[in-house]
Length: 81
Image (cartoon, rainbow, N blue to C red; front, top):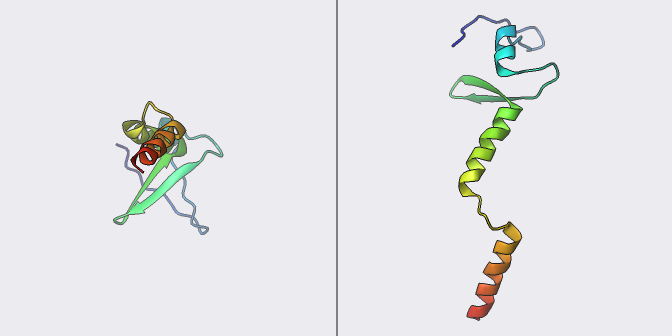
């Protein structure tokens, strides 16, 4: 873990230390996800956020494409009528 004092300028900007940018793979102009919760700030790369969402989605993803799944559900409902 890296703990380092940083400065917030008059425009509210802060400088992410070079070691942290390098370790996180942050490039000039890169997108970051900023979160504020319970009086704490977390910053992740947008790529990491997307990877995390893919991992979450994979738990629920079906091998059957959504349209086929919906079509099957409609057919089952129609057969009950």
